Structure formats: C-alpha cells, structure tokens
Picture 1 (tube, rainbow, N blue to C red):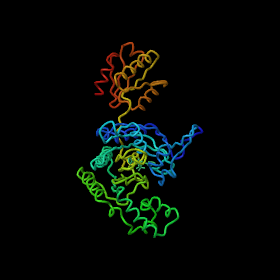
Picture 2 (cartoon, rainbow, N blue to C red; picture 1 turned 30 degrees about the horizontal axis):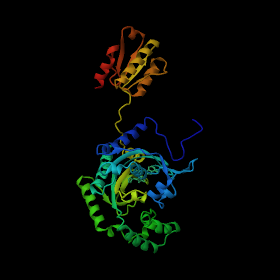
Picture 3 (cartoon, helix red, strand yellow; picture 1 turned 90 degrees about the horizontal axis):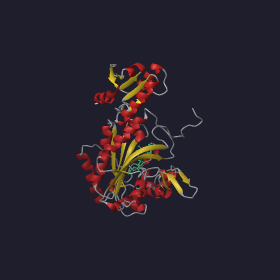
Picture 4 (cartoon, rainbow, N blue to C red; picture 1 turned 90 degrees about the vertical axis):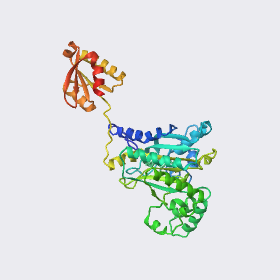
Length: 420
Ligand code: HAM
C-alpha cells in the first residue's frame, strides 16, 4: 500500500467490479441513443456563477456543497456538482438552438462533485448518466424521458423502484402559492435556520425530514390547489402519456427536489432497497433556466440517473449483470521460439477482432495455466517446441476441457468458427 488513500467520500472502480459500472452506463444511455439524443461532453469545471445562478443561491448544493477554486489567473471555478447547467451553457454557446430543429436532445455521462457528508450511497465524487431535451414545451417530451429512464432500469432487471411525480407550477402560479405557503409557515414554531429558509426557499421546508417539523406541516397549503389551468392541463397530459405507456408512477405533491431551476414536471426514481439515500435518479422541467443564465427563453426538460446508486440497487435486488469475459482466447507459450510465434498469433487475432491475451512473465505450465484460468477466456492456445516442430498449437476449450491440435495457419479460422 502506498502512503496515500482515495480522498474521503470517494472510491476507486477497479476490475472486475468496474465492468458493472460500464454496463450500467451503457444500459442507461442505450435507450437515449436510440431515441435521437446526441452525446455531449462538457468540462469538469465551470465558472462558479453558472451554478450559483443556475442551480440556485439558496440550495445546499451551491451554499454548502460546491468544490470551488480560484485559478492562478484569478478565475473563480467550481467542480461541476451537476450536469444540467453545463449542458445548457454549452448548447447555448454553440448556438445549437438556432442550428436545427428544436428540441435539441443531448445525453451525457460523467463525474460530478459535491462536498456532502459521506455515507452509503452518498459520495463526494459520483457518476451520472443524464439527458436534456432543450427548447420545447411538450408534455410528450417529459413523458418520453420518464419512459426511457424506466426502460433503462427494466433492461437492467430492476423492479423494486418507484417513480414519484409532481408539478411545481410555472411563473404564473408558483409565486402565488409561494406567498400563501410563506404565510402559513411564518406562523409555525421553527428553528432559526428553517425560519430563514421560509424567506429564501419555502418549498424546501415541506421537504424537511424531521418529525417535529412534519407534524406542524399538516394543513399547509398544497401547490396542487394553486396550479394554474395551463399547468394543470400540462401535468394531466404528462400523466396520461406515461400511464398509457404502461409505466407506473405515484403522485407525490411533496416532491420538491434540491435544485431551484425546476418548473412544472418534476420526478424522482426511488429504490426501496437503499435506505436513506434512496433516490437513484431525478429530473424535471426547467423552463426558466436558459434565461437565468443569460440565454433566450428555452423551455426544457431532463434527468440524471446516479450510476453509483444504480449499482447499489442492482446489489440490493441481487442482480448480477451478464457481463461476457473480456478475453476470448489466452495464449500460453512454452519456450523462447513458441513465445515469438504465439505472440505473433495473438497480434493477428486481435487485428481480426478476436479478444486475445498472452501469458506474460509466468514460469512453468502450471503458473501459465493459472493465468489462463484467471483471464476467464473460453479458449487457450498452448504451444511448446514439439508442437512448433509439427506446425501446430494445442487449442483447449476451457469449458469442456477438450483439446485438439490445430495447424498454425488455421488457428484464426478455427477460433472464429468456434466463437461463432
Ligand atoms: P440530482 O437529483 O441532484 O439531479 O441528482 C441526480 C442523481 O444523482 C440522484 O438521484 C443520485 O442518484 C445521484 N447523486 C446525487 N448526488 C449524489 C451523491 N452525493 N452521491 C451519489 N450519488 C448522487 C441533478 O443532478 C439534475 N441535474 C438532474 C436533471 C437533469 N434535472 C434536469 N435535468
């Protein structure tokens, strides 16, 4: 072990475990790639003000959880705590909203950073796969995203998750509700920090997990009763479309989310096997975000699914993904001449698209075969001086144990046939 360890709240992904992460990212992005979403990658850090304005000055993410730094040149940057503000910034900067038709549909996958108190499922470095559909106000788009996330989880084999759905209203009706809620909350007996929160972000108070707070919230005005007709109709259509797709959801009028940019549709995917960090993914509509960061009006919707928590969810349900062995053929050379010949064969197989590896550094047949077993390869090629003298190698099927001598120049063909 070295003197150094992974920083607090982080962990390394190492083989063979890391293969599950790749498979999860792949399974989440596959339905997006097949539905018109193009891949976007943005920097790991941004101007700190992008998040302050975008995610919101009153959120925990901005006030407590950002990793900020000042560069030698004096720029104030933050490691990205989420992807939506960055992706919208990038789309606006590239004028994607002017280039073609709307919506601009994008997907991404990467690392995010939040200075949170670490616990199971909550890390300071974590990974998300996300999707954003920029520039269209259409309930079918909200529904599409929810359906695609559901499809991703179903293909992974997950079933013990629920979709919570809510509408947060728009700039017409939410301010009216906000004021009504503030009026109610100001009359309660709350601690200093919560009293402050009433003035900055009253909806978050509804989300307070403490029983003594929840008790007082009985009878609080509910946003549902304040939604304007447009928001109501919009939400009703989203619900209908999701329902018609056979995707089950629960209405959760207390679902607020920890980012300020949401309007109308909001949702969260929660998994019931994860304990307190149960949100495996979340998202919603953010019709005002573009204007908040200096762009034109571009109503948009998106989500991000947490890769770390999705992997935990798989574990909780006892699901092992069917990940094929990375290596199909493993070559074992006995003797100097055989080394040269088989190394050449391995290079040839690789060029032909057959995943092959070579036994390096081992001494003696036993330790070579240990390497072969460890590789998980279905076939081994073994050759010694005597095989070479006969112009053959021994091709062994590691599953059945069967072995046959194959002429050197027929190895590739034979393997291709066997591997199908
Ligand atoms: P979020 O709900 O903050 O939304 O994060 C989405 C998911 O990322 C969470 O449900 C969770 O699975 C994962 N996640 C968040 N924080 C952590 C952490 N500290 N450790 C492990 N996993 C974590 C967003 O980030 C929005 N940008 C989603 C969105 C996209 N809304 C619209 N478009």
